[in-house]
Image (tube, rainbow, N blue to C red; front, side):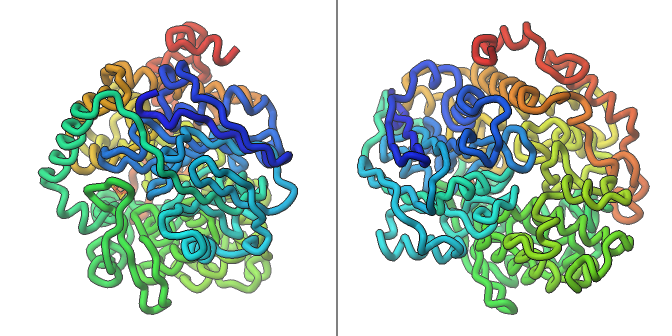
Length: 607
Ligand code: SF4
């Protein structure tokens, strides 16, 4: 098939069996690739009720038709699994240079199945595919392991690796690559850990066939030209995602002290501008990227060399913990990356612990003697290590904020900031109704990237609870994840503002199939409904209550900052859900109706 590697690689870890099968043409037609493949394989192949940490769960790594080709940022792949954090669908996107090698090895998806009896790494060099012993690497940090493989095999091998967090089954462990890119959310690294796969090491040298080479060249050129001509390119490249830090602070969206406010009095210390001046050494980009958002930094105070911190890490490990020193945030970033735990969930759960400590719910004897006041950077570093190794209080925090707060009780559930068990990412959603709804209904839990609606809130009136806002969230949820399906970065569209229609001739030239955005958004809607059905299948009683946000956003108005005194009323939260379900064609309890599934061609898939 044009634009595809052509094979699905199955790795049976229990028996050490490796098999390749042709990528089904019908799958490419209906789900295209990337996140679409991951959602489909998860629904069809992981049996109902499978233990996320058991042998029946699978880790599915998928590229898309753009992956590895000359399309801006075409270095993205999707990691899908049943989440050990939420018990529902997990999907994490990873950039860097790993994806291109998968494609060049003639593979569209790698599916890890079963559980290996001992630590291994998966070695792929085109058609030479082997499971090799990783006993001597088990227990090591991600940076050392990546360096080990680069030195041993050569720079052209790309490495995806877990750290001690994944080995110790912290349910929000991530997968690291390229010394700073992650498949971060939902515990994809935990599933790799329980399968005892320390790393995947890959090199591919094959060609990818495209349907029309001349048209592909022309379409690729047009896309790169649009990026190059974009007005925002220079500023974006200078600051990357940290460009939004000061804006978020100004408008009250910067998570501050466990999301109790959206503006931080120490904000300037962690703004993108401060970071650029104080610690950034150089810019760093993913495969084929004309607008590198990665910032490689050196925090002299700690002698930490790290890619980042990017905005989410600054928000969650900085202001959310009351830390106003960018060097301390960079050190925390280095630790979570090396230990292989998600910076967003980690910052969120530490923020919750700090609030518990300041409210007297946790005392020094519960915290192994640590003074967990907001702003304590040294205690943050210690907690990160304790979480990854599950030592002392780290054992509690390693379970995630939903489980930890359920165990501690004493009202701490009210300020556990999560949806469906996934800790909320970097936007405080007091009186920002579209962004709040985006978090409530996101298909993996409280994650921002499916529908980044905060700017729309500001544009049309943040407190409005109207059908237009709901429609905007739904449109973004159907459209934005298409980049994860195609295997390229969305930020050239989001940040540089390039015309999305420029992607269509490229897709046609590569695959030979003419598709409109209407058609692609339908695929996005198909995946959205399939993953909703997955949540419902795996969780008895799944429905509206699962979509509720933390009470913090409808009960606790911030006492300081730009959103001081502002809140969304509970009745408005429910109104948002009513409108959302209606516009989605779901029941009033949030379940897709049979005619909706029929219209999306999903009846047979979910049967
Ligand atoms: Fe990677 Fe950033 Fe470029 Fe996207 S914009 S491809 S995330 S470097």
